[in-house]
Length: 441
Ligand SMILES: Cc1cc2nc3c(=O)[nH]c(=O)nc-3n(C[C@H](O)[C@H](O)[C@H](O)COP(=O)(O)OP(=O)(O)OC[C@H]3O[C@@H](n4cnc5c(N)ncnc54)[C@H](O)[C@@H]3O)c2cc1C
Image 1: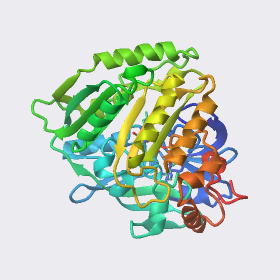
Image 2 (image 1 turned 90 degrees about the vertical axis):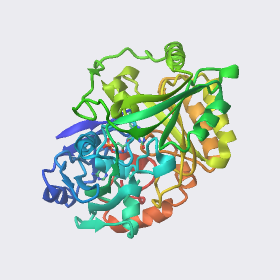
Image 3 (image 1 turned 180 degrees about the horizontal axis):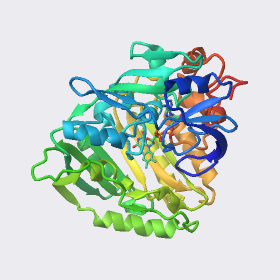
């Protein structure tokens, strides 16, 4: 069936043939069919990573098996949703080693984007906890890849362009119960936000929300939260990650999120936070996936959609990060979800996004006046600092920046080309950013 596909930002849809293989033989047949192919998870990447104009998109929802081994080692189908794995794991005393800000992500999507969470400074990204990947490569061959193989690392963060992941073996982490003990610090400006985040480094999970519209002495004010897993005394039963409580309606007026409304939201959010609180008990869902309480919240941005700008700069380039953030503030770009986070060590994977340093994320409506120039100036600062943008969030970066931001791109391309000599795997992102050899995609 041909249908339009788009990312979470709801920009730049393209039409592809959607194939739903029932098993691995169906995947092998799709790969050998002569059509260009890309795997699609739950479409939670913001841009065009899981789209394939004129080609095929493989929906792997049927590959949702869970098989437990010893000591928290689990083998899962690539189409399994992280929330289903969490709900199966928590009653057994285990949790996913890394979770992004939404639980509506598949195992295949988590590996292909090498996703990170609030614990990156301690535990690294998702790929660091994967022990084995089962994949169908561009020749239709089924391979088992382990961390001693360069094809394993090309697949981690490889945005689906090295093959179709069919299953993976993951080391989960032990947890004492289904709750978190959380601390909160409200911070007055950029420096105190950074300081509070650094002093939260010993916590397993930490993150800061920033008020992107506060100016002057309040520029960079925010809310830093950090937490640890805690036990269940007095806790109820039920799913660790519950179904969404409400759903955003299909139609929202364009420009509902503008400078005025976002400034009001930001200010309220800031004021509601306690200035200093320790020992608050939160559910796993409240702490890790608060946005999941509202299904389809991306519709709030209206028909024009939105983009997420997520960059990382090396640890020593905090001043450049401050300049990047200040430029967004000076331009009064209305972002409600503005997040600052520390990253720890990088992974072995050539296209993995995190490097040791600071990552800044802003959700931005696409109709902000002058946005392309604002983002181009931010790109220059990120590149100058030796930083990069996150491919799973990107919908607009120029291809010329790719080798500057990802210096191991050539190495990744050589491995990719060997895994896919006939150029079967293509995506809109791969074509737009020149990830594929000329003539492919
Ligand atoms: C609200 C929200 C919060 C988020 N927070 C974070 C965060 O904190 N940290 C973070 O790192 N990311 C975050 N993300 C991004 C998200 O985690 C990634 O984009 C993830 O890849 C989405 O998974 P998916 O299953 O929806 O994959 P899709 O978006 O459908 O696909 C993403 C990529 O994975 C590839 N892929 C999917 N399945 C397979 C497979 N079986 N084999 C090979 N390739 C495959 C696709 O080809 C594509 O290139 C967030 C996204 C949202 C919407």
